[in-house]
Image (cartoon, rainbow, N blue to C red; front, side):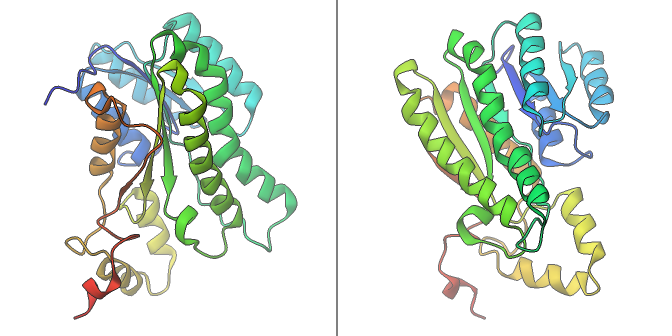
Length: 263
């Protein structure tokens, strides 16, 4: 199926993660479809990623941005305006499960909100005029933590709950403009960050096995490629009548009856 993404300007925040991260994988899938990814992140890996894309003939750029600072986000939006003049899709992907729990300082909690939720609002606010020009759309990357809780991560949980609220609010707010707003919800996905976390645990392999056993579909983790594919379909015109939706790509981890898992 042709997703008709060729030449589309797609802004991706959190795009400069380690190779194989969700943001980096989304960028690669966009490039493979002929889209033009615009990378927004604070990590200078993004310069190398943009260079790789340019060598493939893709007019991509990296805008180094601290996404916890809305003034830097506003500057990034101005750069995008000057370079491209429009945005066909905005993928708000940045997110760090930072462990800012009840024992965290107020500063740590507020920083978590700034990075994991306020950045979504700021990116959307400052990019909206460019999205309106072409009736583009917005896709927010969410987390099962917003629905299930996790423990020890109040900032991230509050942020991701807010992201889902904003997704529906924007779907309502922008419907008169013909602009769609959706969210992809991720549960257990095998990313470099997840791998690093497992390796910090004393009983990491046992913990991993216990998690995988609880994923109903095929007892395996979701791959970043599967998440990227869902993202690309959702932002494409092949999903032109879908808005205000929470699309859970998780092998049934969150919603399916646990009786499926009895041995």
